[in-house]
Length: 120
Image 1 (cartoon, rainbow, N blue to C red):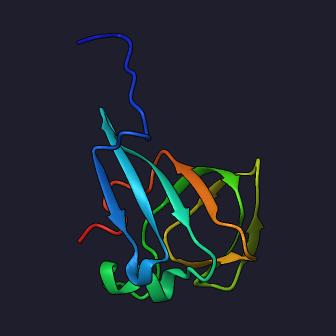
Image 2 (image 1 turned 45 degrees about the vertical axis):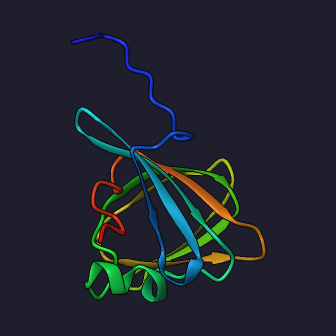
């Protein structure tokens, strides 16, 4: 096995669209799981556009990610709230809802939570 790995999110192994044409997830598979780049368009909300795919009451994926652009609001099942934007690093436990804020697409790179995210 090579000690160096190069993958590009510009040529993903898989692209998963969100319901309602509100964005998509591009995934590359590496040892240990998937790394993904999600583009959440204005108007995207997990509880409206991914919940029908996930079939859970809230997002049950744990996320470790970096916000490239746009803004997102996240609210946990127990009511904790946080807003993320460009340059922010985020750790999110399972059990949350999220949505884009404003008119700019929100782009997030995630190293943990996209293995099964929005997978049909």
